[in-house]
Image (cartoon, rainbow, N blue to C red):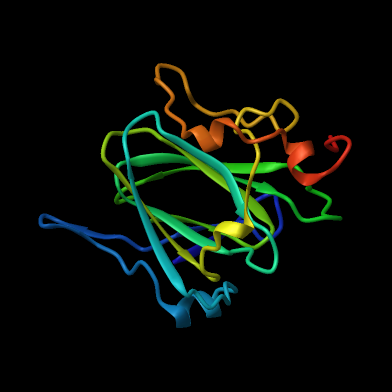
Length: 186
């Protein structure tokens, strides 16, 4: 397992060791001991799974304190474009994002600590997206901002896709309004 730091402190890409042979592949998707030794010392308490079709975009979501969540995400089938946006007040990278492609069998995971919004775009039909969370889901703590907010300017790879969003995601306010700030730092 290799931990790759991103340009935003705390966000990490995890590259698992994938053992392949003529039968397929094997990988260890999680080991508390190994992750703690690698600096991801999180007590995960809930596992989630979503099944989506090509073009589905889920995000940008987070839970407000005290129910904010750290997440360890990966794709078991299909592929997604995964994005995390820094919401940490006072962070030098506040409002900036990191994105990466996650594909089934590539052994790649994305670790998103507390204090980030998260979303993903499904690139293949029947994509199975799974994630571990360190806090349970609480509807009253749920927050979101528009995936296409020009102040955040996430470069979603949407060419050739028929986007499908939930009514809730389409109704999210701008980044600045969702966070109660006047402007987004550049």
